[in-house]
Length: 309
Ligand code: TUI
Picture 1 (cartoon, rainbow, N blue to C red):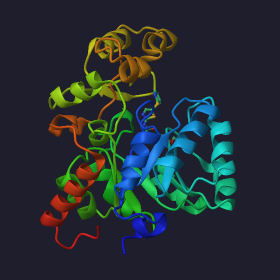
Picture 2 (picture 1 turned 120 degrees about the horizontal axis):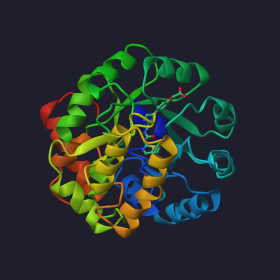
Picture 3 (picture 1 turned 45 degrees about the vertical axis):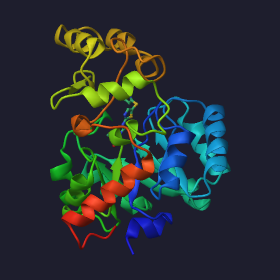
Picture 4 (picture 1 turned 30 degrees about the vertical axis):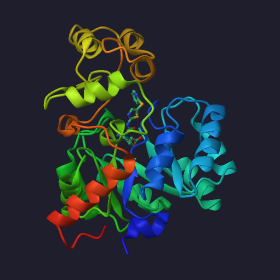
């Protein structure tokens, strides 16, 4: 049996990305009901909001689901408390090092799967008791690391004994097969689930992804130390110009404040931050999560008949 499926008690080793303002109870439960692992994104939301999503998700599915913890959130401590109180089955973490929370999470049986951008952090996480790691290449959307999926995956696979989940640039069965060829035991998929029927965001966001071309998912924030991949629009271009002209970090951050909400809720194509991965342009339709997952599995099995899916 596939190791990730075994650890998480799920049917397919397909993990949904923890997309802030996108991954709510409705999306997470749809992915879990389809046999993958759905996650509610903690993002920058306080405990009460996430508690409501957890309650909702429990009504919508009896399958395992998780919470993604964004470690730069000002509410990270209270979100971790909530996860422990609620004995959430699994968490993924992003944008930092979850070391100080691991012992307490393990005591209540929560599985921990950190996103790691390097071998060093992968090894540290293994030593501290992480159940698996997610390697997220720079192709991914949102906050990104330096290395590509292609080079990071085999290097981390060779450096740890826990299973490795591959992320960044995977939106169909070809990507799944490639990830497994590199030694991954599972995949994390984000952008493809933005264009799912059950994803509750503004339709302009989905259309931005559907209309995007190969070079549209660009990186802002390299100069401020928080590189973020979004689809090219007025906001992204303004931020890049401010960086080029050497504006102070606080002013650049002020320009982008609240922009993820402006994209997902308001659907403002100029002022929103439309986070998406480089693979966005291969996505051509909006489908139910179940169909997305089953098509991916079927394609991957066709390409690689021995794949453990
Ligand atoms: O976290 C993500 N993707 C995200 S978080 C996010 S919200 C945000 N918005 C603006 C600026 C920053 C965050 C939007 N998208 N993916 C997982 C991920 N984690 N990518 C890279 C990392 C990462 C980076 C450094 C994980 C650990 C890490 O460790 C540094 C350390 O402290 O050792």
